Length: 460
Image 1 (cartoon, one colour):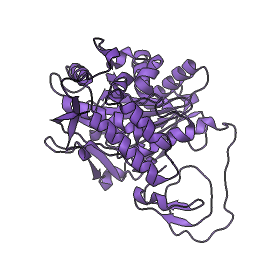
Image 2 (cartoon, rainbow, N blue to C red; image 1 turned 30 degrees about the vertical axis):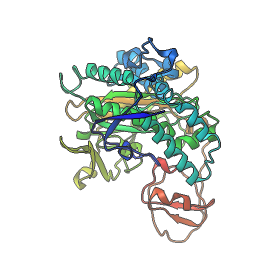
Image 3 (cartoon, rainbow, N blue to C red; image 1 turned 180 degrees about the vertical axis):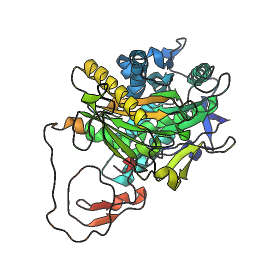
Image 4 (cartoon, helix red, strand yellow; image 1 turned 90 degrees about the vertical axis):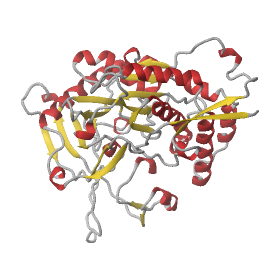
């Protein structure tokens, strides 16, 4: 089959680097690749000719029942906009790119069959084999490109959402483009952070480019390994994408909130963490954030339901770059004066906690059982408004016994060689392995103790 490649230039940047992910710059510099067949050959399978599939759906038309076609992240955003916005929970609008767009890509050039063959006997315990096959899978999708019909619908939906948005009307708006796979953000499993996210994406060509990257990121090394370990069929998990208006938290702060204590499992608190700038700093574990705990039973009953406050180092912050730069975001050191003060107020914490309780109550009712939530929030530095930008069921601590608290005490030890922030409470012994970069993670042996300046979810 002869392929003719036409290219549209577009600018974008990935703010969260996923392990083993090959950006489109390795195919061609900042491009959307539209692969076309010979003019005498059929572009799409015969069964789809003459039938226009709706690939893009406004978030306010989506709910949790749409998860199979838009993925967990997008379904959750739509559910909150429909059900919780009337209760005062603010959620930015946007649209979802459904799994039908992913199917349209895989239906080209026998890509589905080629991917299935490539991954049939992948050895996820062999990191070199995993990385090689994951790279091949992503490049196959990038080379296949988005069909024209999908591109046209994305550009149309983007144009409509930019007509009038949070900060301006009538011009290209800044959006977040995030993967939303059909097995992502489930009550029993979470693919959170395993696939690509792009922040401050501006312009229709850039949005299309980011969408294609997100679809390709279904086959990151980490996502492939997670599916194997959890019994998911590679070809049954489909890619989908959420496109959401950006909140200017680069001028303020953002973070993550849990409706239980992620360390102990205690369910009567909302634990709110935050740092300056865009939320990837906290989500990706790149900083020591501020933390506030709010006692649920006292929310709305007393003036100050906050039971704990702590200020983290907040070492860096992610902000927008100036117009004209090749990159859309950059990481800056946080000034000492800012690092020493809280990045969100007590009033912000009380509002976020109140919203989190409403979200947890709604999802618990929907699922028919208590459902602790993992929620991302952002504050707009221009308008001063707070927003919820993502919400998913918490799947780690909530799966453990909630009435058991385990604490480990070390009776004696030598003077510490180094200190750092702990996540949870436990003790272990073994040979220390210093890892300076994710490329060295394969050097770790079973039973060794990881020592790193800062860990990253992609290291799992």
